[in-house]
Length: 613
Image 1 (cartoon, helix red, strand yellow):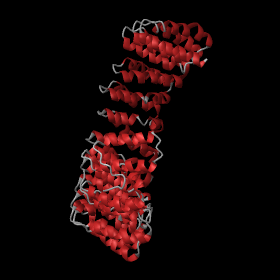
Image 2 (cartoon, helix red, strand yellow):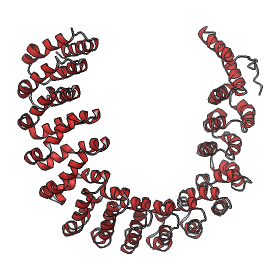
Image 3 (tube, one colour):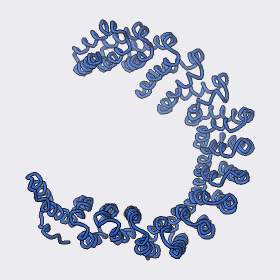
Image 4 (cartoon, helix red, strand yellow):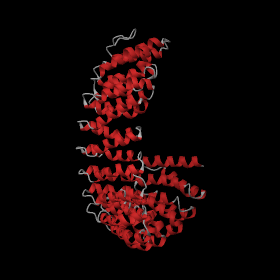
């Protein structure tokens, strides 16, 4: 491509860039000359052997187009870009993106159609990412075209793509029908529907799959009578496709199409499709049905007969032969119960739930454990006590820690279901087991539920059952657990207040501070840092400050410099007299420590304390 007055040959693209930069710095005032030189550089780089250089230049297509102006962009740049369709895929991806943003560079909507030519070619490229980017750019251009331009340029383009020799162009065409259908005349709409149905029946599975993905969206813009007479039959045919990758995509279509139909037609047209998908020979299709079952249930409507049909289908999924399907269905139990109501929940779901609680797959049991507590709100109390309570207690004793953890994570609803008495009998042994689990992530996970459990148990029962374990976590071999345990002490102290904390936690923190193990003493440092925020000025002075001053003299430097930060924090929660007489002198002493890290953190703490005043 030749650019007049701007086609200077360059051996080194870097020197060309330097020349442009020097011209700008010299304030030449010759903007036109500078622009022409820049365009020359970019066009030369488009032909460079280095892919990265071509890529960088391709990203600046809008700069080239603006410098050339609309006329030259239309007649020179756009035809020139057609030469790049055989380039590297990375180049074509950028080209596809850039073309969608050049509407203003070709003179606006009036000339935007000229960009469709190279994009049509790119829509047939083998690389899926290139095709997707090209289709996105075509959609951007369609949005600025008027109806006459749609009829003149887009309809022929879609026809060519939809009937193209290569399956790649047919795949791309399936995404464009929705964009143009409502903007063309009735005769062309008939043709568009015929082409789309033809894609749904294409010999190539990938084309059918792409058409299936777009079917629901296309149905949304088609008149009701044609949805019933053409789109629904095409969808039902796709549910029987030989490829499960095609069939599983019809699940989402059922949801979208059902939302368009009246109640009677939903029952006639959609429910048989859902039945067929539920009994599909491929577990992946059945899994998709289970995963989308809440949306399907909402889409078929609230009519009692439809709800009955859907709950029967759901029960089949709960007892499916594949664990993955049962797991997906188990996760939806509570949501489905809310949709179908108390009566159907009681009659239809309780027995399958009992079976799932004993399922051989731990993932299925874990999925059920994460939602089973929600069922209590969807059934009468009698049913909850008779059917759900035994399953709840059984899951609490499950051999898999994830199952037990999922149950405990729903502690907010525990009291309303089984009360504190049964809680202490069944839940606390499970908590104790999880607290000592070999996997440290399980121990860490149970930690975050302890404050919630403290609220449920009350101070006396908590002290008897869990107080010792809370302190034991401070001695854990994993640092993350010790940190979380220190934060837990603060949360529990805030619940039970200072007097309870002084009696139950402070002696244990003191024992940690006097331990021979540096890790335990460091845990005491973290505990003091957190507890000082909730214990009140008086208790902080009498209980925590002496421990803090002792740890500030620890023989381990890491403990001393960490204590400097704790002392700084403590100054916010004690009286000024304590700060002046005890905390500041200690920080000053630390700032003169023999260890440079201790000196650094102590000096920073002193500076921050002075700034607060």
